[in-house]
Image (cartoon, rainbow, N blue to C red; front, top):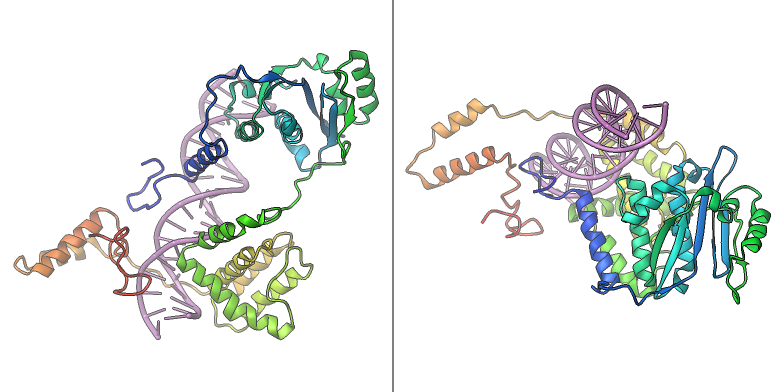
Length: 390
DNA sequence: CACTCATGTGGAATAGTCGT
DNA sequence: ACGACTATTCCACATGAGTG
């Protein structure tokens, strides 16, 4: 009953809890249900040092491995706002993602000079959500690449190699230091990653279908298509068929708004203005159909057309003001009326007693009448034994 | 002081009902 | 099927108290 706060709630778990189940499911499938009962068959792999730095002027990260490769980069403005322990952890994740494939069946001594992340990594979980997310990713990566990472703490003074990598213009200092300490074990040679020194690590926009192997396309479509209830899917169809299609014909637009279409803002605005103009629709309905059209584009493998459109929210607020109609309030049925109804029930009449029974159950369980009863005899809303009272 | 944690609030997303 | 309307859920964000 976790997450159940009110009697009539149907979903009995919180979103967070469901995501946790999902995570375990994914992990177990990745690992084919295996567990490690011993780890002594893992061989020692290369040693890795990592570091991140954050200052007003420059924020960056970098790592180097005794097997030769090293990498460094500058964080973009958004990433630079994150706490330093997150950036340290992110640097580790970046490193494992690129080096993991060469670490199969090995354990990696991994030096981190941020205690907060290192300690969390050693106990493998953290109360801080941002760190816990990184640790979860690291866990998945270790399973994926079949390797083990053993973290150790690196005093900042001892991190004379990775430290300059994370700072502005530190490459020369790094190269000298690596030579001096003979860090790279021959026959390996020191070698920067192909895009080392990149200006930033922005999170580039990617939609769900980018890079998805063709074999998974139908499954992905099925999942996305089934994501919405039939009721909601109906709105998506109406928005597209009834309101969007005529516009595309009129203006000669393609039916699908492609990702990053530079005219998407104007197209969407036209869509809204047209609905506003014909004065048949109330603000809520317009809002619903805008939501529907956006969803439709997602189903067509495109990015949400509203992404990146400036002032969209303000525009929609104005539309809401213009199309506002006061709603008719619903009134509560007074308790005294319910009692009066119950008092008139004829105890010898089966249907009346049945009705009274029903009424009391609904009242006592905070249920709404639609919860236990089917809406129609036939059609989509007919009797459903999983949902309605037997 | 910086951070965490609990709690409250408003809005968006979505599911559902009801009348035509 | 369509459109108007309500209900529920989730999330971002504000606030304020507690904590090291």
